[in-house]
Image (cartoon, rainbow over all chains, first blue to last red):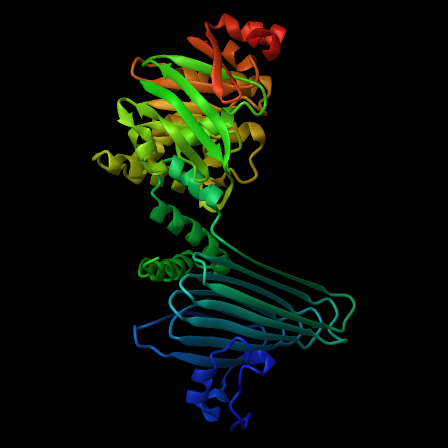
Length: 255
Length: 247
């Protein structure tokens, strides 16, 4: 059941920020494997995951194909703090009035390379999507978000939003944003934004002037930053748990 | 209490403070006035230890401790409070969370026990009431969406909660309407007018001094204190201007 006969390489647009060595080692068959999720009309399905790394973890590529029936809702919230190369790829097809909600955080140091790749196909009118991705990196690590939004001509009244922001805690870390909007319908809303920067040093000094030590200030600022990605998690306890488990990875970082 | 000797400092290699000397005794409020570009804000940032403001000479002691040797957060734990001319907005961090972290970090640094959530809220409520700031505002992200006046009131609430020994207030009066000015003035008096405390009020105008009576007024020009006097000096500056008074 392989869709790609050959191993993707970083020359392929969709894999341009990937780790070529990892791909070659993983092989074509493993990389062509997709999980599928079918969300029935009117139903909601939600996935929350925090993917952590052991010191030797080489990484993973997860590919997920989701179909959301009429008026249904699929939510996916994920933190990647794993592996030398880690990728979560989600392809969602939305029927009329369906919604896709995505919140992702990449967080890592060392030589880690972590990415989210989404393809959101607004296959019918009135469907909506909202994606918020935050990246926190140090060392020589890289965080990527490749987000394609497709709105074919017949899909009027679609509302699609995508927002990516990265904080680089050290020189040498980097982030890549690749929004792709393919819009053929004329009565739609599609918003996207991307920003890459350092931690706000004015806020850090303001906190210090009140007695908050730099490591605590950094954690508060990073917490606020990554929490954006999980804002739309409905259940408070689930949201707090996601944020805390994500931040715990920052503690392990010797920045 | 605060003793500044021959302080020189530069920003981006440009000398701003050029041998500033000043002493504020315990229980005193001093005002520093001066024209734009005199170095007033630089002085407050240097005292607070803001990165980028480089001290090139002189000394600053607070209650006998060399301030310049300490990191900014250590200065705060020692009892220094910096009131910002432009308080910083911090999205995603609530005032309550921010202040509780600050108070407890300071208490920890001083070897005191941390406040529990309940204890902290009690103190916060009391100080917010004093400054007529709605407690609900403290549940909002730090300074986000606050008007200029609300930000300055919130600075005073922070000062009340942190209960510093010495406050350097940088143009706390700018952006305030008359009512807010009165409230802030009362706040300064109630929080800081104590025998063991001191205040350095940095201001452009004389009007805050109608509410907070200074013991001494200094004129800062070109990086130095060029004239010092009693409260009447502020009125003279207001009437005659900096140039005439310092000529």
